[in-house]
Image (cartoon, rainbow, N blue to C red):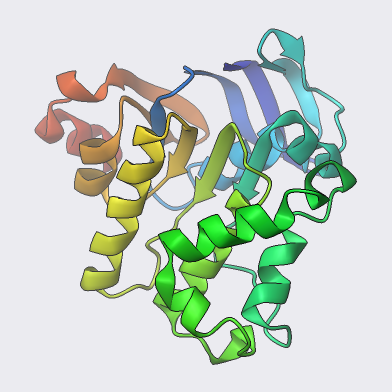
Length: 233
């Protein structure tokens, strides 16, 4: 569904990704793990068109995505839930959700999608008229997830969803990821918790210093070997 082919990308004169290739199959959860500074978020930003490519290409269903404006990605069925939630704190929960369907293509179905978000995250419905800035970290992550689902994406890209959350909230989060998988959504997940990430994944990529050092089906992963590579032993 998404093919990243030998890309190089970075920030100005500083290159971060070196000849990175990954393949994301439809209906699967592909997880990208690696230590801080490995290039995980940079890779997601490159896929979303937030960073220009110095080399290589990115394809969606065989069509080149390179140079596609980021604001057009939801219309192509690709949505990213960024690290750190990035909700609009002075707006209500429902207003935040509605922004996820801002594109004209998705506005007609916005009320139906909002109801689906409330069904998935009942606590958001209970607080729908509250300012988003009053939410806990876990509730804010639910809101970010719900907002991302408002465009009914075929590909959902999620960056570090468990960051800073309590273990009980992380459990709920990964249960939600499992439900989204069962719905047939294609998911790209960046996550530092290796055991949880591998446990929910179909395909695993390990990035180290901007390069793919491991590409393996999750069912075949040797966690000891994975951690040796992760910590560059």
